[in-house]
Length: 44
Image (cartoon, rainbow, N blue to C red; front, side, top):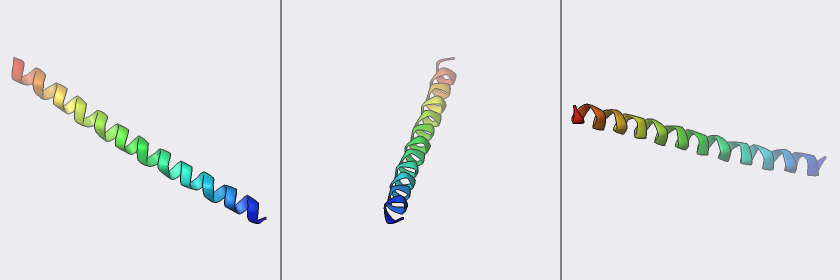
């Protein structure tokens, strides 16, 4: 039982790290998109 709960805790930790990475990746993507739009607007 203890091994199973430890494995589950490790999986939860990995999942949390993946979610954090995805949030950071999406935030960076949104910033890049906004920057691209601003540069396109400034060119015209």
